[in-house]
Length: 105
Image (cartoon, rainbow, N blue to C red; front, side, top):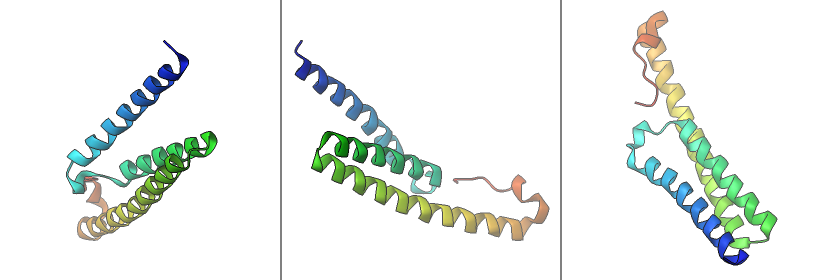
C-alpha cells in the first residue's frame, strides 16, 4: 500500500468517527442536547480548523472554524437556558430544588 493511500484511509476513518458523533447529536431531541454537548462540538471544530491551518488546507480550516464558532454560540445559548431553568427550580422549590431538577430534560 502506498503512503498516499494510507493517509486517505486514516482521513476517512477520522471523518467517519467524527460524523458518527454528529449523527448521534442530531438524533437526540433538541431539548436533550446540553451545553456540554455543544461545547464538545466547538472543541472538535477547533481541532479540525487547527488541522487545516497546520496542513495549509484553507477549506478544512474554514469549515472547522465555522463549526467551532457555531457550536460555541449554541453552547452559550443553551447554557443561558439551563441557568434560567435552574433559577426557576430554585425559586419554586427552595432548598430542595435538586430533587426536582433534571439537567438536559
